[in-house]
Length: 265
Ligand SMILES: [Zn+2]
Image (cartoon, rainbow, N blue to C red; front, top):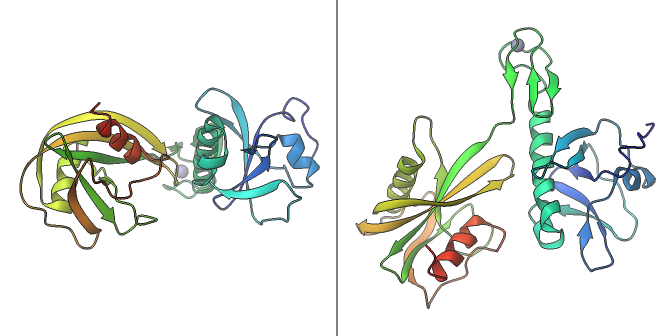
């Protein structure tokens, strides 16, 4: 492919499944290569998508069909693991690139009439037949820190957690629900507890593959823990001085727990 000179210096987020191509830097970290560097590796750069990152930067993204051997200093790293080795800005950009690639791959045909869709804008496709418009879907989920008094927090281990840490109650928003109703329902379903004073704290894009986590804090009101066994393996209140292993810094769960430990929520 003939490379466009203007595009050569842009960051190129190249994925194989959910693994991202990264190169070592001098500072014991990794970074994302430019389009030119990817081309120099002999990898195909055809069919790259333009993606506008959250900070307004134009980046390039491409999903490869196969993984190729790499020279020293280059690695395929999992998108989640990339949090530990990439600059934070690049990690966020990688999440956006991944979501757009995922959407692009899952919106080739009109879901209404089956006609191949046409990309009209970076985040909009249209069906030329019935004019149905497609945008990247966002799956909204809530996550909530439930506190009992000032010193105890409800922590759970969900069966789908990757690891032994204990985190917070979370779940997907259902059609017709408000976020607050979702928080109340999830806590009741998973633990049988009644809560009150549900307050929004912050949110986090969760690009695995297209989530938005909306974080809340709430107060325990009443009830004994009756755990939903299909989803959870443990659920209990823990004192702030005796916490078990908690989630990694990557997640909003950890941010909420840290805010609570600092007595900010
Ligand atoms: Zn259509």
